[in-house]
Image 1 (cartoon, rainbow, N blue to C red):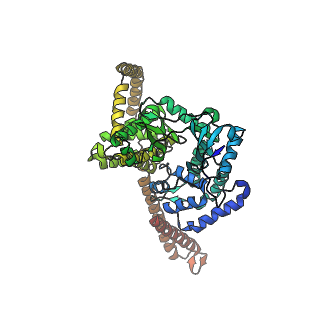
Image 2: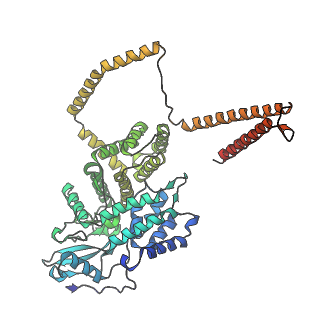
Image 3: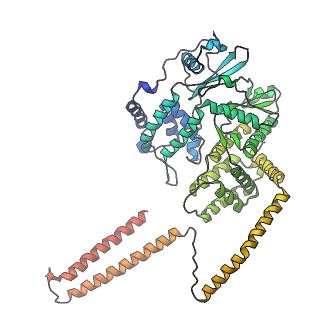
Length: 541
């Protein structure tokens, strides 16, 4: 096999899990934690530095965590998004060993040429250019050997150390770092199966009906769970504005096409690229080419419809429709303070009320919605959380291409058009017919229930239950005040009664005081101490 360029000399070598015990690795993690003095708290910047010091597997986890604003506060997501994507490359001998182990034969029997210098190196894999025996140019995405085992070991150890890394937000809530790790490990395991990524590419290609969008072709016979082989597509990076302009591309047109393509992925296909940063999008021959399709998100038809309604509600300033959409999309348990949720959403819409639709930043809308949901005890499904990160990333890319292109306007236009196109008068009439039949069928039941209600009311047997949403805390305080008042009155009665006993000659006596009076004074003292304690305790809380 020909060698294109000489591989740079490595000064250190990445160790495998077998080269160090769990105890040694845990000690290393503890030393990193100690170096950053976690006892004094965990800041976003401190967390980023910790993950960088712990190595590639934790860098990957940090990158994944940055895409979950529903699990972590915004300031943490923004900081973790700064984690470097490139890590120290593997030695080419390791790459060759992985290829030969996966293919079961020498690389020279499959490839005419493999470039020893990687095109890119990340925490899970690195990419090399190669040429097949028939002359076709391909790229090989090769997984780091032992990365699964290494990450699995680190995850187990990180769970043990997670108690040291509690993230407290301004509201005083504490983020369950162990739960965050579980979420990220699930996504990371999916990314480490390259057959899954190849399936993503196939699905995107089948769903694509836009003539200005393209996806690389997978070489299935050379693709395994640890090696992904696909055609090599050379182009200009979507973030290279000067090069794009020099090549004759209209940046505004590119921005609108990119936004339209992403809107189609989200609203029409329900299957979208979850990490659309500039390094994953290139332009070739006027076509937008999507790369690195390992991290994707999905939306169910129901969630897509609710998301469309949420967009229309934001554009129209409709609090009721937005609240209905948020409740429909989110997952929740326990009681919901509907009044507080409506107030929060109304406050959000009020901030956008005076703005033109074209000047609204959709990434800010997504952050606000997820923040409101989290503060009201609502959890967004993974698809919506990943979509939020994807939109935030894409909006940054589009704004650099053309600041005048507004993503939410495109979302709104497409959503409105989709709702009109999907409107079927016959289906609506059929739905109305079903509703009328249902109402008719319940009319007799309704009259019976109403008659029974009036009969009970006439006999004085009617009962009305009212639940005041959001009243639990005030009622609890009133109940606590009444209880203290009762104890105070009881204490006063005991004290007065004991004092009256002192005026009598009742025996036996203790220190000249009737024994019963001593018991009364003691009980009064205990009650007084309890009252003072509860009053002081409530003041602090």
